[in-house]
Length: 34
Image 1 (cartoon, rainbow, N blue to C red):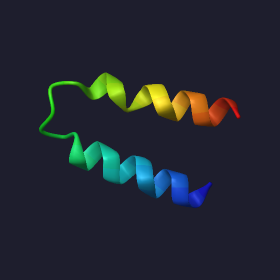
Image 2 (cartoon, one colour; image 1 turned 90 degrees about the vertical axis):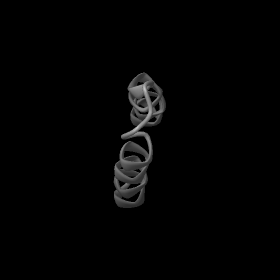
Image 3 (cartoon, rainbow, N blue to C red; image 1 turned 30 degrees about the horizontal axis):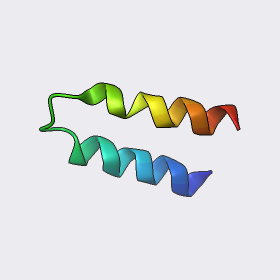
């Protein structure tokens, strides 16, 4: 679970300059449900 948080943090930084931040909370919600 700790690795997942680091991955999300990295993804957010990688998508910081991307105009589509809705691609981040989608996979996070699906993984959190599992």
